[in-house]
Length: 427
Picture (tube, rainbow, N blue to C red):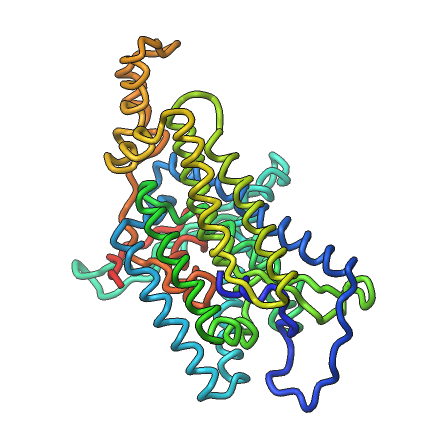
């Protein structure tokens, strides 16, 4: 969200912080801009679509280590405040301290976190590629504190040979990013962060989603139009917190350096709302994904409108200014047309366990029987579709900033079988 305000950024991820008298870059060609913007839109859609699908599987998980982090209404209400404080802090850091040392520390941090995120992302695909007779051995990394009866597990990390292969492949990308800061390596990490964010961060209801998106709508507009803080941080930050694509790719090839950019917050924040609507679609048992596809198309419309307005006015645009009304308004209009607004918000306010009964009660009063199973069977199966998830205790402080996906996903991205015995500390 933040860096999408600077979609037409002129500095690449590896650009020097204080270049001496830089020569003016030639303006991007129409073909180059079309390729860059089209690629950014495509890259934004991929983690939302596949992350939403994976969020359904994540919600079905019976393993406590795979359970998603749930954002409650309280988290959503204070999210923009914490995000603003973090963004302003980063801005002051860049003004006071040398960008070189700050970005060096951030590079090391995102090097580790990016490897874990990318490994988790490619793990399902890699598991299908391994032959059936692959010698898959199990390993365990255990850290304890104390001895005897007072011994306490700090980390109990279980993994196998397939996980090691995924980590090795991800480490190659990590070293490439650390040494070259190449835009392709940056995008691989950015896509991994985005997909994992959509998969593992769950809104507990539609009302919470409206609060979160509404608050960040104001946050984005203020920090882009009211100050230069957002754009300054976006261009100074050498970390995979944004997707970039060169507008001069046709002229310079892979060494191009005139980038258009899109912040990860503009992907993850609408993405978790779209994933919520997919789970709502599934809970209705209608074998249709009306609300998911409606919100997905709305996202495409909102992002396209952002790019169009930015191109016309030649000024950085807060993407959530266009994405939030589209992603909330379109599904609500569909729900209003179908007469399901009450179901949508009753489901949200009643919690996961009451999702299916609400929809089925509506059908029962309408004398429309549910084929194939009884009302009680459907009620009990709804817990398997959308089980209750733990309250978010490590929520992201700034979507699309270094603290963005790190705190909320640091425990989740490492491995699907990772278990921590220590009690989480609320932020």
